[in-house]
Image 1 (tube, rainbow, N blue to C red):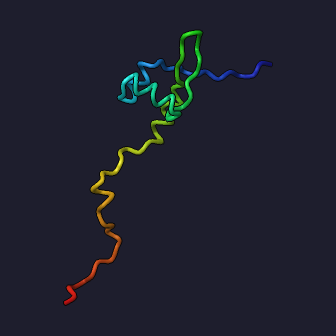
Image 2 (image 1 turned 90 degrees about the vertical axis):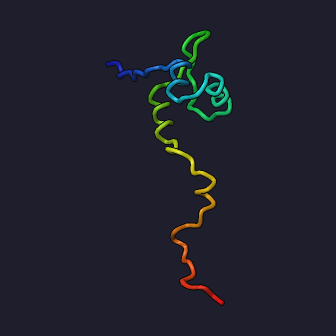
Image 3 (image 1 turned 45 degrees about the vertical axis):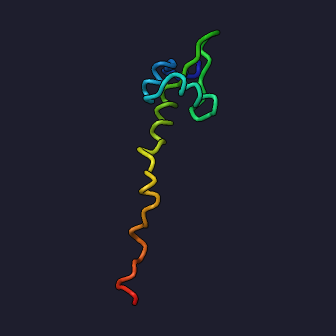
Length: 86
C-alpha cells in the first residue's frame, strides 16, 4: 500500500512579497540573509515558498516592534519614591 503524500501549496515570489507587504527586492534580500523560510526549487527557473511555512513564519513575528520611547520609559513595576527628599 502506498504511503499518503503531503500536498503543499507553493507561493510564487510576487505573492509572498504582497503577503508580507514588501518589495520583491526586499524579499530576495531577506531570503539571501536567511530571514525567511527556505525557498523551494519548483523548476529550472522557478522557485517558490511553501504557504504553510510562510504563514507560520508570519504568525511567529511580533505584531509590532516597541518604539524607542517605550524602550526608554521606566517600567510601571518599579517602585517610585513616595515623597520628596529635602
